[in-house]
Length: 144
Image (tube, rainbow, N blue to C red; front, side):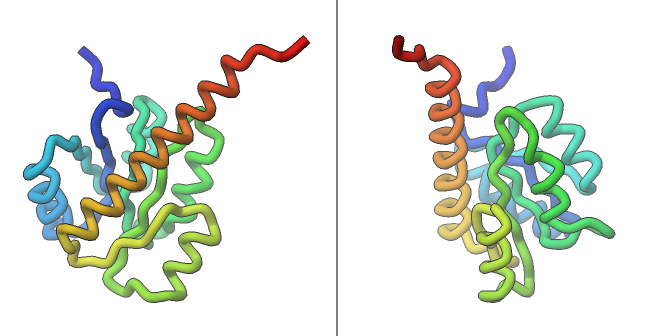
């Protein structure tokens, strides 16, 4: 049976730090949420194209790529994921950039439990609501 990402919080994390990955796994382990992890931009794009992923948690830099490259790569998808950027150097400037370019939010590393739960749950709800609105528009019957 295939997992329905609209039924429970599902996220994909692109993290190069094993410590950050383990920290996020621990947080997800104390919930009924589902976490997939990959190490590279290319692995993330491949997974996102294969299966709907509501929330992507990505480092601000992905080798030679950035979170913005990821945002552009998923932009044309039918149900693009919500992008949450993480950084050890989180500041108002990066937060503003994330919001202005279409990212959902910025999470500071190391991860703080309550903030992770709050941001990811709100991001998933945002994705779910956007998907529902898209379904309504597709199935709307024109007046006439």
